[in-house]
Image (cartoon, rainbow, N blue to C red; front, side, top):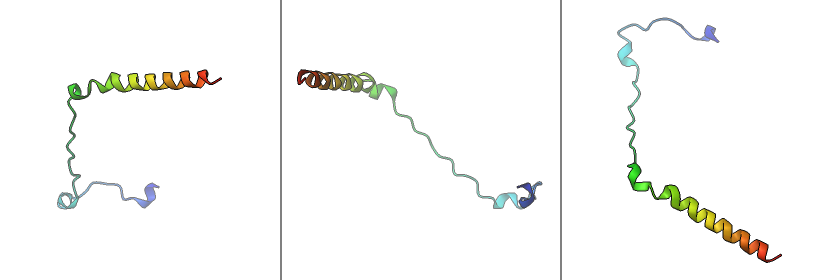
Length: 60
């Protein structure tokens, strides 16, 4: 595969012609704003599963 590529140094005049990647800004969400979702969503899911299991076993 290296036969298809030219390996070496780039001439200093040509370095400015290369497009530099755009820097992306990473934003973070304040962890205090979503603390309740860490336990509310699993708790609600557990309640729903428990109710579904209870309804399923009561029909038999």
